[in-house]
Length: 134
Image 1: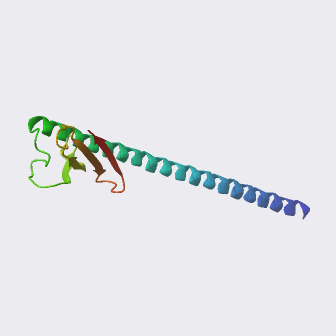
Image 2 (image 1 turned 90 degrees about the vertical axis):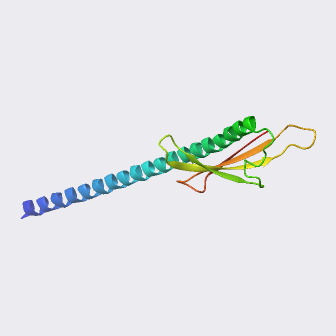
């Protein structure tokens, strides 16, 4: 009888060891999954910030080009006060964002125009980048 009792105790100890090992493994897998998801979210947010900056930069370049072809037009060709919103597309024609231009005409006797461009992305409306030049 003693032998049978002993085997049952050993089997019970093995079950506890397997249970503890499984719990530790599940905790580690869960932690790595959360870490990976956080890293992915951070990477996507960084990509969206870069795209918003590129959008704002495109607005600056566009209006510098516009002024080179129409040096006295400080209303984006519309004839009314701004801000002026333009859609921003990737190379495949998909809209990835927009830029909003605020143009300040130069004061009398000056030729210095102030252009403020605010870039946004479609995928995350909470992100914006602002560039201002003179």
